[in-house]
Amino acid sequence: MQSLPDLTSFTKPVQANTMSGIQVRLSQSQFQNRMSEFLGKHINVVFTDATVSFGIFQKIEGNTITLQNMRQKKKTHFIPDINEVYFDKKS
Image (tube, rainbow, N blue to C red; front, side, top):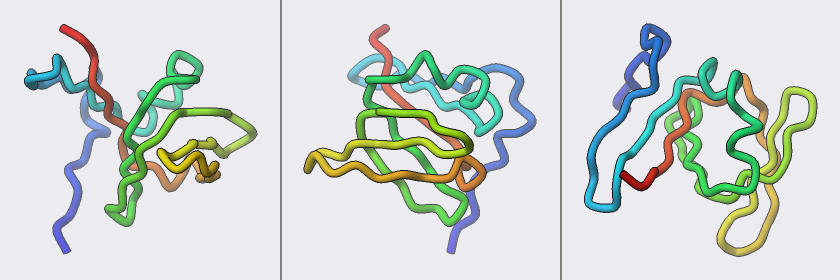
């Protein structure tokens, strides 16, 4: 299995231009510092086991977050299991 890049050395969000705008990638610590900004928005969460969840960021509770996927199912995830978060931003 391919290992994920280490984003802990980045002090600023990583940005890449895409056809839909700019893709912003945040490390777990960057995301934790700005979590409330993303409530109600679509985000992609990459976990330490290299799986990805996409959904609407619904809730922060203790050391967990809740995402609502495209099938309207809510799923709770532990923040320590997050490797990075990325989302598209209009340029």
